[in-house]
Image (cartoon, rainbow, N blue to C red; front, side, top):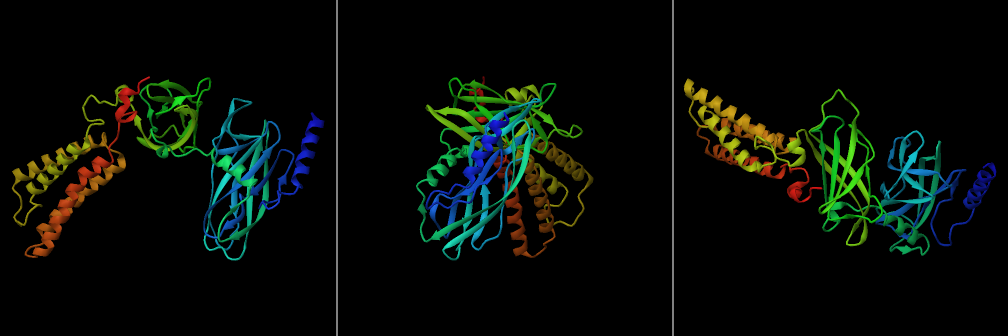
Length: 434
């Protein structure tokens, strides 16, 4: 074993001092016993303006790995920080689809072994001169059964010109790894994905993620990788074929058990090992998923009271009419300075109570953010009505306030439509049962 480790170290050290391909822009290798890393460019000459793609290139000793953006139970992903340079703008590290590693102690890691190139999207704006000198501070961790942290300073001297000239050796390598970066689900024709958190049963809540329009690759179980979440830890996903797609179930561990489960929360996932029309498919998605706390919600998206996942627009219209009725009964909607008689005040409170009840109904049909905007529109209606009643003979002001009141009244149903919640699996969930 010692002889093998010495041989690996010798090979990595020898590769580190080997010259880069002629004409290619690349940093020197930063090498150690477990890995070597460098910056590479697919350009012999890069353009001075616009977006270019560089690469963070690792090669690893056998059985060692580096990490994806969610490292798993331990570890951390590479962190790259560029020193300021003239013309250098934003730099963004991209993430090829990862692999899952089962580690001793029932630990799990997500990352890459043997070799990986992280594409690096960089923006240039009028970079001066004919060369761009880049310096990047890199922190990274390589792991096997043990982990070793490293830090490296990578420098790259990139020639610049008015037009891009690709490098015939480096460009295909970077292109191959760019092709492994999963595209957003929204860009894939015929693909839909969504999810919800099922807390309808005793025990840990379960995140259910559906991918429609794709199938499981024969002889291979698809993999789902979740990005880190501030409220939940995750267990190993399971996958099964379902009519029209694939269903993943991921048990969740609540990190702060003294807090209630969020009614809505964002999740981001990457899926690998799917096929569409016989072609391999990977994807990534970011979705705000809702919480389902009853079996009826979790299975069908129906509510016994008839208020869950129905059309929220009529409810919003009724809430607007009830609020306007309350304003009129209280004498807010009008120009009279006479106090409203007690019977009208009482009916006004009844109309206000109806408004609150309708808002509760909307809370089961629209997102919390949408409900907040609807409530603000109703409050704005009340303010406009009150100001209009105090406008007196100022007709222009009265007309403007009437228009504002009408706009707020029309905004409520529109907000309800735009922020409506869909049942688990979306509108077509009835055709997606397993």
